[in-house]
Length: 516
Image 1 (cartoon, rainbow, N blue to C red):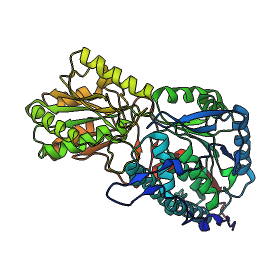
Image 2: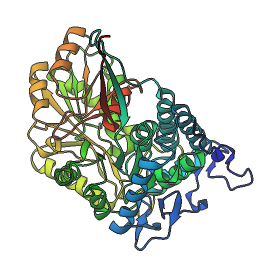
Image 3: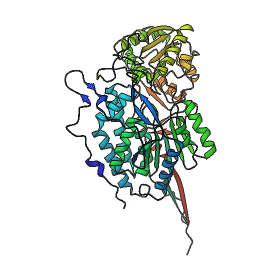
């Protein structure tokens, strides 16, 4: 049995170190200025002084956070070579499943122990409110890695009954070298939902974080090495499109997972057409909520829909971009939505009480503001929101949570993915009309149905071409339940044991038993 080095189990944050989240008094506050940032690539278990660098900006202020590595093609190819060597002859793929489970468990423990540090890094580089960084991003990543560790050994092969004269052994084997292209809006999610399952099988993983958010991912991967994951089994390569292309076009990469835009997904599918790699994509599109006439408690429904539309400043792939409400309740629901929106606190993401922080970049905020302006020019009514004349932090690109009514199902504001805190209410005559409208949006990750009728809920859910349908809820989930994108170009599943199919291959060994 191979024993992996558990040196990271003793790693800790010095009790005399500066406090990163001030929890004194009523209003907690994060202090990213107290962090020492390192944006160098992590290759072979070591930080590498890069040939090129890129500036990473803080969304809250627009100021530079630091100069992170921009991984070149040559550096990416070196990481691929090390990953291939690790998978071919290294200890990770050949280690006992119990040892891999122990290493992942130690990794989760270290992430939990360094939770404040990681949360403050995410807050600084994405502008996400610190409370959400800690309670959603960090906690979710830790929980997912622990789940992957516990699942090791429960997903192996089987022996089908092929009759008395043969024996078939069907084994699940790791796929090889895996590249994961991660988004900026949930930097650690790719670690929990993609990297950990891939590592659990014995693969070697190359992770490219977004150019907007490399720091938390790099720090988290360092902790993985401290926990016993070999340097060749996990590399982190910050950079931009050319870094991703270097991974996507290399013939030694066996599997590519992309979480991002449809444009990014199409690019990697083109690369895979040349190399033969398997590509899995989650490409967003945001979600639709269908609110039927018999829905009770519209005030509670409105609060959940507003949270779904505005969490992370609306920069979430399952965000509620459109609400299809029965005409008989549309006016009442509009009032409740306005009330829920008015309760939100737009503020400095470093403050614990902030609900809505800045957009990731001024360009992103400008694109969403332009979409809102175009919708209003096309006849939509702005009930709440729009650009803020006085942002909570100087230099931050903020948008007030926005509600539009008098919107038609063909307007770009609802057909396109508007990646900001915007939702539109469309009045419809019945659930059939709502389903027909939803089909025109082409989104495929999730939707929600709100009704008092189980018959209506099941009928509508069965007609929606999405991976997940919530009934009278939003964003309810569990790690035992697969999440998939059934929209334009989406493929594969995350979470649950279904994710393992992306990172493994089935091999059958057939033995013919000769009669004596």
